[in-house]
Amino acid sequence: MPEPVRVTGGKHAGPAERPYDLVLTDVRAVTPAGVIHGGVAVRDGVLLRFLSAEERPRAARTVDGGGRYLLPGLIDSHVHFRTPGLTYKEDWEHGSRAAAAGGVTTVIDMPNTLPPLLDPADAARKAAMVQGRSLVDYRFHLGVAGDDPSPLLDATPREATSVKVFLAGHHTAPTVVRDPASLTRIFGYARESGLRVVLHAEDDGVFELLDSWTGAPGRYLDYERVRPRSGAIVAVAKVLELVRRHGTAVHVLHVSTAEEADLLAAAAHAGLPVTFEVTPHHLSFTAADSARIGARARLSPAIRHERDQRRLWEAVLAGQAATIGSDHAPHTREEKLRPVADAPPGLPGVQEMLPAVFTGMRRHAPWQSPGTHLELIARLLAANPADLFGIDGRKGRLLPGRDADFVLFDADTPWMVTGAAMHSKCGWSAYEGWTMAGQVRLTVRRGQIIYDADAPGTFGPPDGRWLDAARPATPAHPTRGAVR
Ligand code: DOR
Ligand code: ZN
Image (cartoon, rainbow, N blue to C red; front, side, top):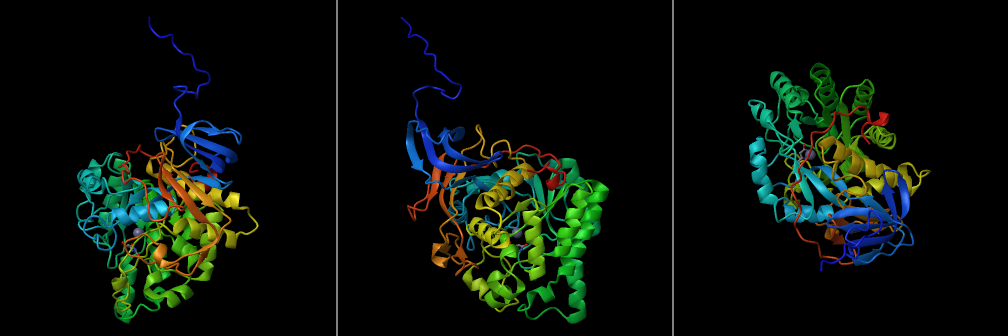
């Protein structure tokens, strides 16, 4: 006789008696609808449902969140993990451990490697190099060469939804686009392929002109003076003109000056498909710190002045900036100790990003609550990058049915950054000696615990996946609600 069909109650009960894989209780979940006190239940890598504060369903593993905040796993849409060719600086084993320890569960990697990723046909090969080495899920930005942008026409969302264009380079950018005709072509092709153009917007012509006048800079101690704000402002003005002409969606990276923030916010307000990123470095340091810390705090574009930093914070707190990206760009200690003009620009940051941004928010807007700050972080560091790069179907928000990517964040326990606690292969941090206002306790990627602050030195399985994506919608102005 056949077994009677068992009727199970409630749409979430699923196969009724099968316990959940993972349950987190007593968390303050930072959801798109606000902060909710309760728990989350996970099965097969997916957030199945929220739990009330009292519920304790059966689970293979239950973690007491201790009343801490639970954020969506962060998406860092700006990392340089250096594969292939530059793995002496960083590799996916180390970079993804740094990411996990920083609450990041998805990264989008930059193409300026050796060789650079210029052809969508090579994306699968790069993914094969990363497979089995990454704790976190990943995607790639394509690169482009000015003399032959035609591979962009073959791009589909499987390989990339974005193309990174360097308008200036210094040590680290193999394919700088200097020629206006090439740039025009790239904007046209990107629009045709539905690729968002992500930009290093500094104008090489401006730097060349200044160098031809004063002689190439011999010393970079006063870095901002030899790679000045005019380079960034001129580049952004040119980019806006191209956007106006072609309608191509752009995301301007590492905005460093007040003027850029003004221009980009105004352009977005005027309806152009323009968004921008700021980095934790530009939010955390000023030119005075650069002089003190030296090449370790140097990146391209330069860290600027207090008034710029104030404007960048305003852009973050007012929702004008769409994303914060770490621009995790490690170089070895030896490289950074070279004579100042030869030390390459770039610093690690994927591990430091969440605590640094949270600490900055507490300092720059102390009248707002920690919950408000973490809601903003969930937008800038998860929901918005997911939307901009087409992975919002699975990532970026704490919602039932989405991937169970979480970070459990302790907003009450300060700690001090040391080089020894950093997981990047480069082994140093520009934030050494900083006291951070909050810390990552646990990171979960598709239901697996990949980082646990209580189990130092152990990490989850390196089975991060190369994610698929959908073609993202063209954003309207973030403060108008289209990018949220
Ligand atoms: O400072 C920087 N470092 N700026 C860049 O544009 C590239 C990056 C790197 O790859 O090191
Ligand atoms: Zn970068």
